[in-house]
Each structure stands twice: as C-alpha cells, then as structure tokens.
Length: 113
Image (cartoon, rainbow, N blue to C red; front, side, top):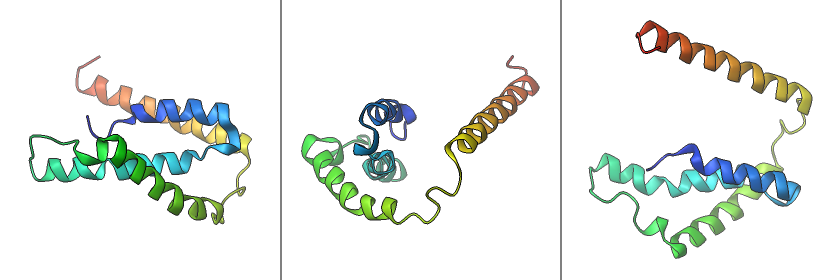
C-alpha cells in the first residue's frame, strides 16, 4: 500500500534508540522518495505499483541519495532550536487532541458513531 504512515513507527523506535545518530528527517524524506514510483503508477493506472524502488538495490540507492542530500538540509535548518522541546511537545499534544475532536465531530455528523 503506497503512502502508508506505518513506516514511521519503526523509524520512531530507531530514533528513540539511536538518538543523534539517526536522522528522522532523512528517514521521512527517504519514505517520500520511495513512494514517488507508486504515485506515478497510481496516476498512470498501472497494475503493479511497487517496482524497482522497492527492491533491496533500489532502496539502497534511494537511501544513499536521501542521506547525502538530507544531512545538509537538516544541519542548515535556521528554525532548529527556535522552539523549546517542552513547548513543541505541548503543541503536538494540543493539535493532536484538536485533530481527534474534529475527526470525532465529522464521524458523529455523518452518523457513523
């Protein structure tokens, strides 16, 4: 299934374990690059969506490219450190809760709940 957020779970676990030795931004960018091929397949209505980029060799090439172009982007981020981790976590919890409320309201208005 293309464009699945399930890939981010293992990445978050590795980030928690590896700390500064693992770039979650580069990992997420790699997932986007991997899913370009399925996107093209969806647009062109191809029967097979995951081809060469979803092989070991394709993943190695894409991971290498993402690692090479991702590190300078992450290191040069002028907003890095602009918000404290505590404030960022509070903002994430608040927006997540608001999003859950919006989804619940939409389900309720459509009679699904």
